[in-house]
Every structure is written in structure tokens, then in C-alpha cells.
Length: 435
Image (tube, rainbow, N blue to C red; front, side):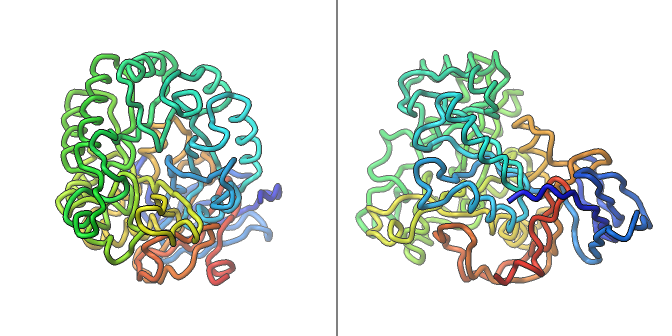
């Protein structure tokens, strides 16, 4: 929990990588009173109480930002709560997260939103929230967008539930545009889904599962891009999974439409072929698809079609995930492994520049969601992650309340050594990494 004592921290000789200013050089950073006081070479401690981080061989980047997490609070705290979720975030290098609103009660009014944000303010990291698009996430009646924004909502989403009513979606985009709010969309049309969680294809056929056809996502993405074209609104296509959807977003961007997209680490790492190996820990909505889709997502991340990497951190209890595949809930946790999977799969295996990966995890989501975060500059909040991009480690346990991840036991590259949030060291691998 947040310690009110401000630290003086001097980071020496780190590779400072800041995509926002296109900085990539070895230098020092001095932190005082929660802010970056100075960036430059050969900085000396201001007094004996300054804590010095010797960052030779390490990369210093803006604190990571995840605009799509489920902390299950309120209503489902046996899976996760705000505190345990923030612990997982810190371990993964995240200093800012945006919580989704499919809670119980739902985030469909300002009173519930304010109560949750009030509790979240006690945590070490910056925690924001979206409000619901529709009342009780029922897809029938729009919420009071203005009241939600004034209460602190950074956007709007019924994540987990697609907005099927086209006219209601049109009205939502018009109203959100008036308030300069983005709507984040779970794009799955139930008309094309026999059973959700696994791609309709060979993997589903092998176990007589049915599955979710790729058209479920493609048709919704196509519809909502058309509505953005009509209204001038702004949307974030969440957890994009199909190559055709990536191409639709690419073409929308060429038109200059306010269409953004996010990809999860599991969608750029795994495919439907992994379901047999990992079972319910490869069940998610939208599902893992084919290798061609995975490669299309990687290409979209490289060329900027896909703006953000977001985990869709979705904790479930061990009992829930141990059920028969047809009965187990969809989703996996992801905050602790997101950066490492990006480094392992995208930087080392797919030749993505590290600066591009960091941009997709910091400056880009901050810009799209209107957050004054995601950059390194004198006077800015001291939100930083310090990591070794080449260090190998095994993800052997989670600090989340849940452990539903197919990546447990994987050897990954890219270890977080320090997470600094608002000028405080909130994660130190040497002290906490082996707990």
C-alpha cells in the first residue's frame, strides 16, 4: 500500500528509452518528491539520503500502462481484488492500469465508480477505470456518460458483452464524441458462436466443441468502423484476434478514422493449436485463432495498425479453471508476463525494435486514453520501469490471487528489476522477486 514518504532516487548509467521523445541513450535520472527532477550525465546524489540505483546494462523506460485489466472488484474478489491486482501489475513493471467495468454492481453510475476509485487511490500505482456504456451492461439503455466522466471514468466499455443493438451503438458514439470519450468494444456477435472460448476450427472440431467463428469478430468490427465513419466517434477494438479485423483497422486508419486497436500477449504468442496442451488456460474471448492470425497481429503491432498491447488480465479461481473445458470460464492473467512475452516473442523472435514495443505499452495507450503518463521528461511523474531485456527467467508463480496462465513454467526473456511509481520504488526484484 502507498507509503507517504517521498524518496530521493538517482538512477545511474541506465539506457533511457523514451519513445515519446525518441530518446535512446545512456544517462542518469534524478527523482525527487515524486517527479523527475533532472535527466543528464554524471549526476551526483543531492544528499546522503538519496537511494542510488546502478542501472548499468539495464533499460529505463516509462512505467508500463495497461488499459484493459479486470481486478474483479467489487463482486468477484475471490478471483482478484484491487490490491492483489496492483501487486501483479507492479511485478510486471506497470505503473498505470485502467480497470474494466464488468463488475457487480456494474460501473453504470457515478456513485459506484467514485467508491471504487476512492479505494484504488490507496494503492502504489495509478488506477483508473472506465464506466459502462449501458445500464447493468444489459445493452438496452445508455448510461449517463457525462456523470461517469465527471466521476473519473477514462472511457466507456461493456467489455465482456458486445453491444448488439446498432442504433444504440450509434447513439453511444454520438454522445461519447460530444464528451471526447472513447468507447472500448468487445467485438463478438453471438450469431456466429456455437460455444465461446475456442476458435471454430480443427481444435474445436477435435473435441466436438463448436467454437466461435472468426466472423463473430469481423462483422462487428466492420459494423462499428462504419458507425465511426458516420458519427466521427472514437473506438478501441479490444483484444483483436482475427487477421481480417487487423486489415479492417488498417484501412480505417488510412481514412483518418478514430479507430484504435489493442492486442494481448496471448494472441501474439499462442494459437488454437495450444488448446490441447493447456486446456482451459487457452480458453478466452475472443479465442486464440490460427497461425496466420497470430502473424497478422504481429505485423499490425509492428506497423502501428494495432496501437496498444493490453493484457485483458482476467483472473479466475483454480476451481473454476479446473472444470470441464465447456464449463470453465474464459480468460487468463497477464500482467506479470506481458513485458517479457513482448520481449521474447516480438523483439527477440520477430525483430521488433524494443522502442516500438515500449511505445505500444506506454506512450500510445496514454495518448489514446488521455492520460498524462507514458513518457520520461523533467517535471513529469516519476513512473518508470527498469529491466534487463536479455535476462532469462522462469515464470514459476504468480502474486495475483489467481494463477490461471498457460505461461507458468515458461522460460522468458526480459526481467523487471525495479518498478518506480510516483517517485517510489514499489517493486524491487532483489527484495521481492523470490518471495
